[in-house]
Image 1 (cartoon, rainbow, N blue to C red):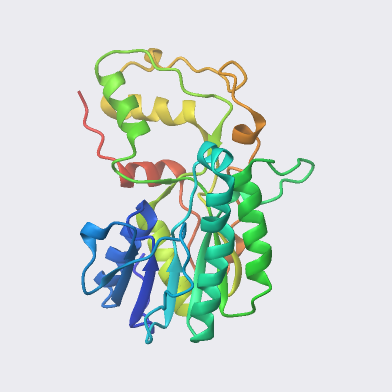
Image 2: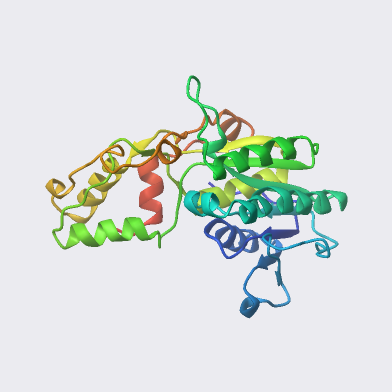
Length: 289
């Protein structure tokens, strides 16, 4: 689906080194939007690419003056890293992120902040207690108190063509090697391109509050690898699923929401929830043996 003409001519993408930020920057430029990116890498700075590290003090950092929309894609997202580096990741995911958002909205910049399906309450099930999830919940609460110049966008699992896990599975199956994906861990996969399109549309519409982005249904990692085997012509007998419990994974990893309701995405954004396997096929080039 082609995005509607954008009223946003200048945008700021915070965290352009990551998957979503990188794809979003490319998407916005393809739609004639002037993009300023932030990076933590000194060797990549330039006229449209500036240094910003949310792990460090941002008291003296000032955003561009003429940005209508900002997209906060930078975050510390690895569960173990957040557990091992609590003070640093609270700065990145909560305190410095909020300071940045306040700087932006003080300049009348509409600001979108990425969040996670892990922050979504599943009826009858407690939210995961890990640091990453709790930091995202705290950030969401604080952002909602900042008014109608802020949007929160929760994402399910986002894939890119260079996602190592999928490439490893594909290579193993092509070599005739047995793999052991989880049958009881599910995802509602999205392509980075779909996410970028939705983010632009939320920015264009200045749609504040919480919006969920999700595929239409959840699939297990075992389902995904069976699909890969069929696509490349490998034997599905090579897919021998295991369980999270058998692998000793904790509830912090396995107990979160993997799929989100999409009423707002479909109704207000006009984006039908995509089929998970369509998103996978759109992202990866599976070559038959």
